[in-house]
Structures are given as C-alpha cells and as structure tokens.
Amino acid sequence: MESCPFCRVAEGKAQARVVFDGDEVLAFHDIAPRAPVHVLVIPRRHIVSLAHTSQGDRDLLGTLLAAAAEAARQTGIADSGYRVVANSGAEGGQTVAHLHLHVLGGRPMGWPPG
Ligand code: AMP
Ligand code: ZN
Image (cartoon, helix red, strand yellow):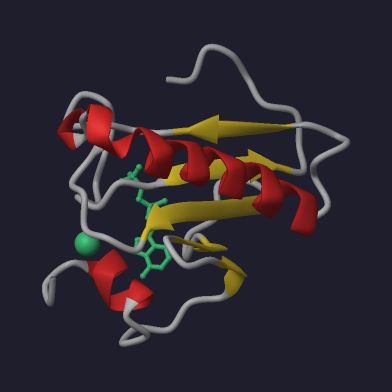
C-alpha cells in the first residue's frame, strides 16, 4: 500500500533501523522512542489493526508475538523486563493504520497506561 508508512518500510521504500527481519514480520526502532528501547513489530502484509484480524490470522499473530520476544532479546531487555502494546483504533491511541506491536523497555513501566 503506497500511502501506508509501514508498508513503505516493509517494502524497503522508507528507511528504518531494522532489528529483526522475518519472512512475514519485520521489527524496527520507533522513530520517536518513548523508552530507551522502543521497537515496532509489524506484519509485512497490510492489516489495519488487531480489530481487522480474524481466526485465519492466528498463525501470523503468533509469529508477531514471537517476533516481539525475539526483538526484546536482540535489544537486551529480555531479562530486565519489557512491555508489549498493541494500540487499536481511535480510542486505543492508534495513529498508524498498519497493525504493529510496540516493544518498550530499558526503564520501569508505569501502570495503568494513560
Ligand atoms: P501508534 O500510535 O500505536 O499507531 O504507534 C505508531 C508509532 O509509529 C509511533 O510510536 C510513531 O513514533 C511510530 N512511527 C511512525 N512513523 C514511523 C516510521 N517511519 N518509522 C518508525 N516509527 C514510526
Ligand atoms: Zn501498511
């Protein structure tokens, strides 16, 4: 999808600091990090949000979560702890309409999120 910023990253048309590059998923550093480590994990295929997934996406969603754990290992936050977040839709705080997981770490996380 030409107009989607994360499709552009997935297609190599926009630059990103890649952490983990898989067949179905891609992990890269957030451009405006909210924590010392802030990585985004996306499916290469354009899916708008978690609300746009179905039972047929179960394998892909598992792959996405496993990639988040791998990104945490590769960025050195697996042992200290981290948070995985999927904002979905307007009231969920989603601003980029391509499904992504945030992997945040490197500092203590507050709870609940705002
Ligand atoms: P959300 O608000 O959950 O949709 O998260 C979107 C995230 O994408 C924000 O944390 C942005 O800083 C980040 N972001 C937007 N464009 C890019 C980009 N081109 N490369 C990396 N991160 C981006
Ligand atoms: Zn997209």
